[in-house]
Length: 400
Image (cartoon, rainbow, N blue to C red; front, side, top):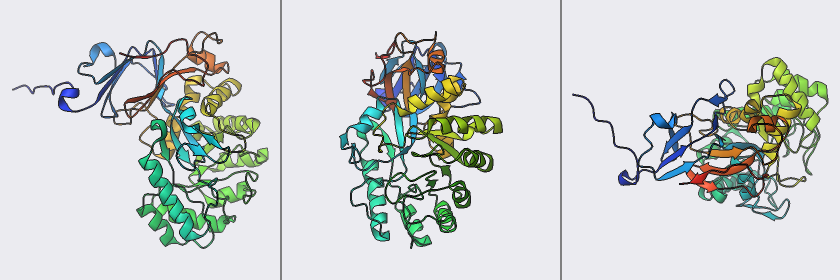
């Protein structure tokens, strides 16, 4: 006896079904196959369940239907390096709404490199653990404009022992703040703490380059290599980059993520890109902004890095987009940032900016232009429509 197909998901069975149809191009986030042969995506309860041709898919019973109007869909962008404090406020620049503005730049996920701009940030071990746990909790409980903020990233200090990392992990902390922003500035001590963190599933990032804030200092290639973190934070400096030979050495010696940031040295960013390409390591390149910082807030920072690396670094735009979502997803072990069944339904829909050069979105970006963001979606829910920050898109998706 033939099995009966399950009914189409929809309001009648309590599941939220999102259908995005009439997509002009789907960028996958995967460097090995950056463009998918598909024009429709179906998501159930915030997860991708099917990608293909709409004429061959069951699009009925949708809770929400989006007509992409021929625009390009990509995984939501990921900013691998931010310094949040609390909610959607940053005391670093006395600015409200910076995360909402970042969403309008196509970014759906932020990853903290330490809540270092908290006024009176505690540096004693009890205090720093308490703040990390609290930070993890308040961003878990409150997502500004729907944006996912992975926070609660303690800056390591002298005197921490293995049990401190075990306690942090058991409380839900999964990140360390930038090593080098606290009192630990020698590779041997930092390496031991990174090993403890890794043992309990906590990912680590190291500051690279000259000092950025009072209390930080130079972190050179030798310390980066000795420490052995999971991410080489702002390899192009935040703000001041290391000498060229040290950047090349890091690219040659490290299997970790090579993080390029907006607030760093653009020439050093291109050096990193070119070196990684020569070494066959472009899959290790990830992007961040390193904001809010002295340079301010950069709502379009990830898009600007994609356009800059594509245009000046001679990288196909569809590959450069992978630096800002899929590469980060894989290096950071996230369940977002890739168009893949089971992954979170986090998307940015874009089109070529009005009157920009090039015949397509990809050609326009490779000429150095920003695309126009028309919609963002997080966990299958529309979180913003036409961007107030990007140049206006030629076409914008509509909710049917």
